Amino acid sequence: MKPIHTIIKSAATVSLLAFSVFAANAALLPISGDFQADHFSAKVVSVDQKNHVVVLEGTEGNKVSLNVPEDAGTLTNLKAGDIVDTTVTRSVAVALDTNIDKSAPTASSTKGIEKATPADREHEAFRQVNVQLKIKHIDLKNNEITFEGPKGQQKTITVVDPDVQARLKDLKVNQSVRVTYTDSIQIKANAAK
Image 1 (cartoon, helix red, strand yellow):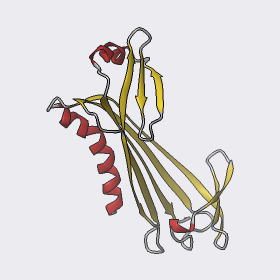
Image 2 (image 1 turned 45 degrees about the vertical axis):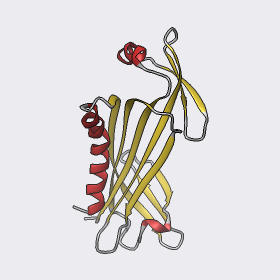
Image 3 (image 1 turned 30 degrees about the vertical axis):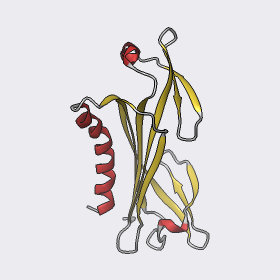
Image 4 (image 1 turned 180 degrees about the vertical axis):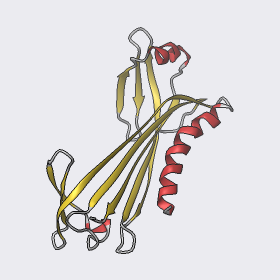
């Protein structure tokens, strides 16, 4: 298993589990989380090495032309007839920090990439974004919360989940909500038979 694959899985798992661990200390309460994974395969129709363009054909015969960034690695081991398997994962974890914090909202990101090589036909990449939002207003009557983001922008959202609506009364202005987004992609080219 590639090191980046371990990092991708760890990043998604830690994002979702960390909030549960911190919840035991009653400082960070999990609000919600979601994980999605999609897998698809396509046949390589053509490879334009010079222009870094690959044409793929899906299982229903639909063709799509992809401009592959040069920093994605080499295309020399990709040939017409190869099957490209792709797995895309997305996760989000949301937690409430029960401490009142006067510091400004923050944002940070991390990313990693493992390029395909002639010896290894697998390409992997991940990106994780952490955002800390500040609660600025709570409207219990309309089930709305106004957040302030890292750049000072404010956004009001309507809470539609009845379980979360029931917990709105426990929120306080200036509490933080931490949101972690993790995306990853794994692409493996299998030689034509």
